[in-house]
Amino acid sequence: MAARSVWRARAKLLLAATAAGGGAGAALILSSDDPASAFKLSTAVPIRLLRDSVSAATTAFDYKYSLWGLPEGSPEWTRVKHEVHIRGARRLQELCFRNGGVYIKLGQHISQLEYLVPEEYVHIMRESMLNKCPVSTYDQVCEVVKKELGGTPEEIFEEFDPVPIASASLAQVHIARTCDGQKVAVKVQHTHMTDTAAADTATVDLIVNTLHQLFPSFDYRWLVDEIRESLPKELDFLVEAKNSVKCMDNFRKLSPQVARYIYAPRVDWNLSTSRLLTMEYIDGAQVNDLKTIQRLGIQPRDVAKLVSQAFAEMMFKHGFVHCDPHAANVLVRPLRSGNGSIFGRKKPQLVLLDHGLYKDLDDSIRINYAALWKGLIFSDPKAIRENSVKLGAGEDLYALFAGILTMRPWNRVIDPAVDHLVVHGTDHSELQMYASQYFPQITELLRRLPRVILLMLKTNDCLRAVSNEL
Image (cartoon, rainbow, N blue to C red; front, side, top):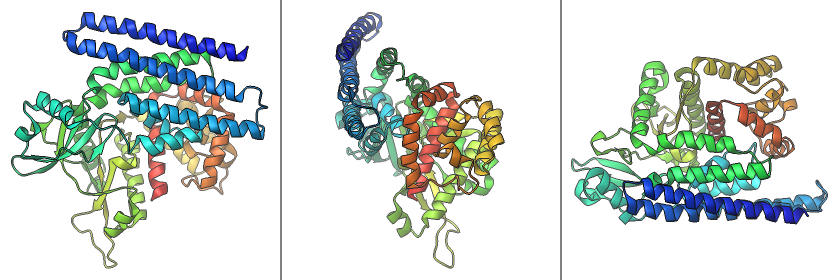
């Protein structure tokens, strides 16, 4: 009976995918001003949606069938569940790479959810989604450059390296030299992103909602909502350029004591559009590249302190926060003036890249969030409860919220002997057990919290990962 019900669920999911994909494609062709592009997209969307549906249904069936009849918590159940998690994570990884774009972004989000997603998913997504993104062909790059700037890369730039130095979910970066001799980094959006982003978001939304109906404990609708809100801004590179300018203005005006230690590449506005961004090229070490940092004469602990200080200034003073500070988006270089000491140590300067995802924190959220962290650091249960409730966690889930922020269970959150700014290896395994035990409560908490706080959780996780490596 259980197997038949899962097969029926799988059939429903596939049927919904086919119907939705076909209907969306027909509507797109009829309403488009560019029928040829619309036809190309309308044939791609159903295939991608069907691919989504098969992957989701296969994974759901794998869990139900593989664990069927095994006593929950038994050694055999634990072993089999670990294997199913790995298969599911590999299946999701393949889906993200085959579909690209929005799906890579989704995989990157999942890689940061240590408090919600099984460890196998976090590990597999993290090892692949940040550094192994698909690369557009040079012909596709030329197509974007010509459409955005009116000529081929060779016509617009004095030099243009056809091999990208980096590729991410939405774009890839090429080194070039402008006609006046300036070395620049040119960020070129993947060709399919503008066309498929809305359709991909809709298909992911359909899959997630269908899975939630079939399996109520599976509720990742908040994650799709966040992608739907943030993606249009990230796809407009002029928004990213303006964010970088505002970020630096905030440091100069509101945090002058640290401003010289923070840098964002200058934008060449004459060679930038919503799909192509030309910036000053910066040579620096990736923030988690300890060997290179030390070879530059910089102490990793100084970098860790500067990272923490810079983002604390953004969160608690500026109210305008870079929400994607993973290692690939933060470079380190020696401060160019007054950077030596009698011991030969050089002061670090952080170079912040990828300014596409920022969030504004209003005064009440900044004050409550700061007071909450003060309560966490000083193990003050009353302050933790009061400020967690003000931020939306509720009287029933404030302890869980504190556990997610500090990555440890409540009994250690309120233990004054614990340093709450340090996470040890044992805390991760403890957290995974905690997350598994309270999965429904965690999903409910994430549904309640304002979306800006969800982005702060992601930012915290990125910063914690960087600090641990330093």
